[in-house]
Length: 99
Image 1 (cartoon, rainbow, N blue to C red):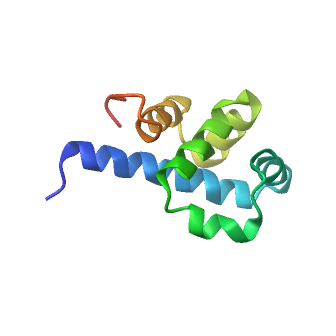
Image 2 (tube, rainbow, N blue to C red):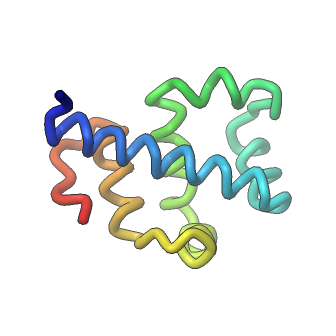
Image 3 (tube, rainbow, N blue to C red):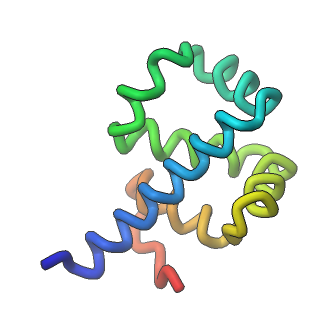
């Protein structure tokens, strides 16, 4: 049985994977992400299982408000959910409730 903490971390990881999926469909943002990280598209699949990479995806959104808002508008996620995901994935501490 999963604890509430595990479920919350799973939600944070799911949010980060949603960011990656959204970026893949947004060539301009995706290109910017690859340029800033120095990653090649072929590296993304292996990196997607790494919590540091997932934290970096969320941090990429948080570092540019127009990109964050475009993601939220396209996916229905709230900016607060993205902030909580970042806090959990980056180890910044408790991120609160995922409702």
